[in-house]
Length: 294
Ligand code: KIV
Image (cartoon, rainbow, N blue to C red; front, side, top):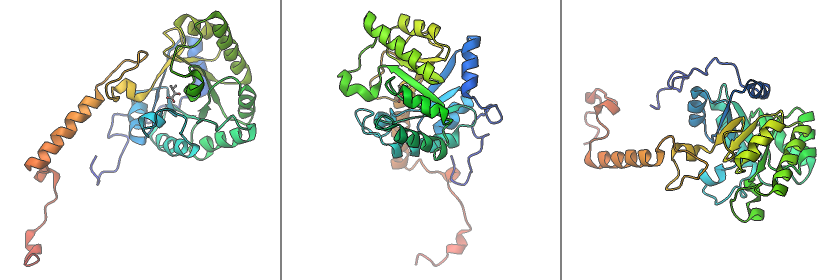
């Protein structure tokens, strides 16, 4: 985009500009009608505008930004300030999609008061319309947040903030005992007032069963087609990861290679004097410069 052109909603096609905002109630109604819910992670303003205009129902400002935006090897180092910074940018770019802020490691499990204060920051400071947190142990905290007017999305199965407990990324709920635990946790979160539930890396039949058993929408990632919706990490979906696409993802673009080719072409053009041309430059009456480089 040119520096002298202000961004407008028409610089990208935007059917979303005047569309009605997606709400938590709408997502629930979609489940009722059997309409699949679409969600993707986004971490910045420009991508939020494109995703929103494409008609995505929900945007998760995921703490996966720790890996894909900040270069950490897990979500554990991500702070509240990191999350607020990125959520603010996404909120500025999303007019229609429901923006959900992902509460980072230890921001909601030390005390219910601190959890409420941090969730409040997502809503008041960053402008998110809901928050997400991992696990079912925090069900009483979820209840307090909902009572305070904060919509909460739960997250069960492979909960990445517990990677140091799991040891590695592996499918959760594969034994009957583990499956029952996840089902019970899902019911617990529904009873606590969660408006939806992410199910990550759980077997397809278990996710489908949970989706039938609870009335709130399930949003799967590596949890099969029986969920009420799907979420993907932006970089997996766009092929923006260098060399690695997880099994649960499908590459809908080849961003890493497309970007690499563009950068190489730019470098070559600059070095060869092919960029910039007059088309990219600003003329003036050169007489005005007369005598200045003497
Ligand atoms: O942070 C994230 O990207 C997530 C998704 C995996 C659901 O929590």
